[in-house]
Length: 226
Image (cartoon, rainbow, N blue to C red; front, top):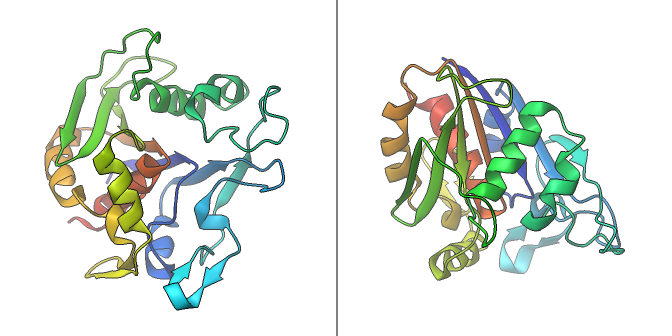
């Protein structure tokens, strides 16, 4: 099995304890989030809130590795630092090279107007899941390492799946209880991505917001697909 690293930005929680324990077996598992301002973070997973009547539980069952993000000078409350992709450039400057490269790719997949075009080795929307693959990294272009990048919410379908993500948990035969909206389209997406990574020695899975949850789900597929 190749080395699998999960480097994600501001993700909602896709699953419960069983799934979180699975992600703990990755080579690296890091969640970037906003640790400033009155909300202290933007990561739904880490909000200390439970609403039993609605079957909502936003407390992550296991401790993951968190890294504080630098707030933007124009955002004194710190509400959108890191979560807002246009602010990534400021925060990424001080990151480890691999993490900074992941942040840059998370921005590139949104294709903001005015951004220079980015050439992906593979770029698809599979049943409503937007993703791209870039081989190589910040220190060289080689096919032995692949960055698999998931775009966050951008289309109406994305936002609808976000809403489904907050519905009561569904039972996945391998992952256990999961939030259904983040699973939609991922079976088909993994079937397309899997052969593209056949000879890769190291895989970095990354994404922002909804894309981060999808990155988590893909990591789960990679760890359990024999």
